[in-house]
Structures are given as C-alpha cells and as structure tokens.
Amino acid sequence: MGFMKVTIFTSGLLAVAGTALRKVKVALVTKSERNLLAA
Image (cartoon, rainbow, N blue to C red; front, side):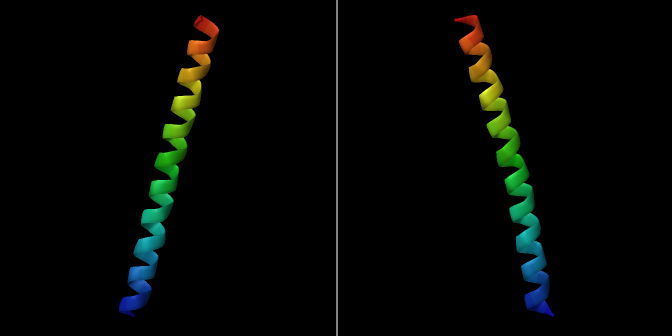
C-alpha cells in the first residue's frame, strides 16, 4: 500500500515536471525565434 502511494506520487511529480519543462522549452524556442526575426 505504501509503495503504491509512493509510486503514484512519483509518477505525478514526473508528469508535473515534464509539463513544466515542456512549457519552458516552448517559451525559450518562441523567444529565440522572435530574436531571430528581429535580428
């Protein structure tokens, strides 16, 4: 029971972290594309 809770918690954290990383990546790509267009 405890192990299952830890597993679910860990996968939840990984999902949140993955979503955050994806958002950061998209933001960085958008920013660099704007810089390229402005240059």
